Length: 143
Image (spheres, one colour):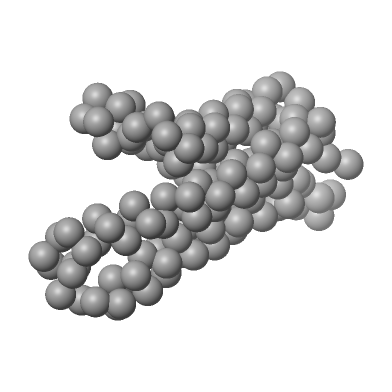
């Protein structure tokens, strides 16, 4: 049986992935405009759009793999990798606000919500009842 903190992690982390996807959809026109403005990516034509979509898809796959390893397999390594990614996401948000790259439009608000959900999800991984989930399991034959 999974601890309640892991169940809460499940819900919050999967919600953060879904909200992040909604944010990517909302920001897609802006992303395409930025790609068209940049001379290096504008020369690539539709390949730049495919690459941007591919990067989003790879990000979702990595997020889902981390979820599987944390929520289903109890991987301590995956937990720490997700913590690093979350710290990076928070830092990127702070830098984005300070440079004006993140604006408080629909996409910016959705990005803030996604990072907040991910941060809350990661916090549940460090609660006392989650510690047993990440503890190595020993069988009698191992002793």
